[in-house]
Length: 335
Ligand code: TXA
Ligand code: MG
Image 1 (cartoon, rainbow, N blue to C red):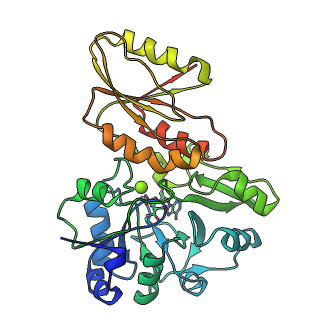
Image 2 (image 1 turned 90 degrees about the vertical axis):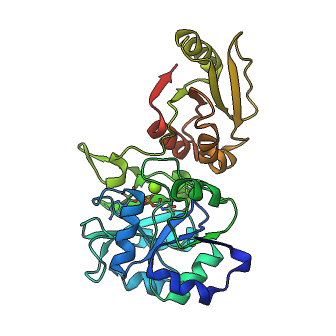
């Protein structure tokens, strides 16, 4: 296994590694990348991640020309506005796929989710390859997403030929996934671009569409996600009462003595007598919390008997933060 930093990278030397999978940095999370036209490499993504075959991969392009080579038009005017404003960046759009795209990439669907990542090194690689790359997050399915190369190493060890280290991811949560349903931009997965940022750009309402009468519109949304091995308890509701909820939980669970405490905005707690707290503060402001969220879950995993997390509200990036935390939680306690 070779790890090369983006500054030391010679793009030409990377191309040969695309006969298999390559770990690439993106602004959201690290990706496990394969040339979409290489069935062996695409198959390895599912095998390495232990990913269910019906969970399709996001495809990454470096130009609109490349986008047009894999999707059927017409492109809705709303999509054009989103691409103009946010690409390259953390938003992925659902299109009808051209037949040339391997059905394995699409999880057997006739649609395709595409984005243009905001990472210079990755855009250069895609451009030089001349083909789109499929890249899900570079973690074992179900574990917290990777935002540093160390996280990727922790999950895959030496199983991958080349890992490209671009430093900590600047956004830290995955892209927003949207579809165009009944003439409305509809969020399938909240992510790096917020609903209000999209609404400001579109000057029209964006719908939430995680479910379609119980059938997940986005296959990935039905699977267990982002879970540390240590049980995670999420506390949510009005700030005022959250601390009390945490103390109540500790009192009601006398079998635990060592707690991981994930907070934000400088909130601190004193451990009750005889108990030990290991802290992780995700920082101030929602963008910083997004950047630190997955790293915090990974850092405390295995360091304590239960991870207790102080939730945020659902405004702006709060929707993304709470989506990830609710999926990661083995228990949710609400005021
Ligand atoms: O930020 C990101 O999007 C990262 C980086 C690496 O680019 N990638 C990522 O991929 O998060 P992944 O595989 O972890 O998540 C892909 C999500 C899943 O929830 C999947 O079900 C959904 O996108 N998806 C992909 N293709 C789809 C399709 N054709 N229809 C509905 N949902 C789709
Ligand atoms: Mg993922």
